[in-house]
Length: 194
Image (cartoon, rainbow, N blue to C red; front, side):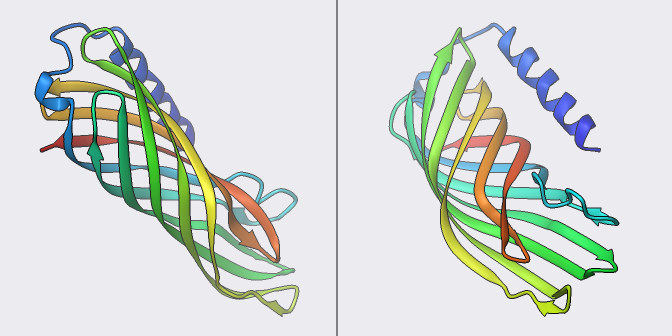
């Protein structure tokens, strides 16, 4: 499933890169933005050397922001990563769900008429809800604020509607038995500008 999502996002990005047409419309240069995205999140190393383990799940994200001009924006968002770690073996039974509130700045480089490549950097206040034990030791919930970053592509279809595909990395979001792990999220979605 993860491979299919990554290939779909890559094909979308390549299609956007070759798109031509009208420029990013002037009314898209600034305004309030609403983004809705869906994809997949995966803890990078959580299942290393663990039997009967899954470290990825479907993820959804909603964001509200302000685009100051074609190149600079600010977003507040909420992401649900689903279950980023689930294991049932002789060391214990563990399930960890994660979500985060985010604040980030975005920078966009327009390419051609409708296309843009963007990056983001910010902070994520995440909550891990953990159940059960690892090797007989109860695992507690975890709440922290950590940096995160992302990069993506977007294509404006109209003056106030765009498609986007994005990769994000959340530092030390997963926490299994005291060992922290980064979470990668791939997503595709839409952005409305008002």
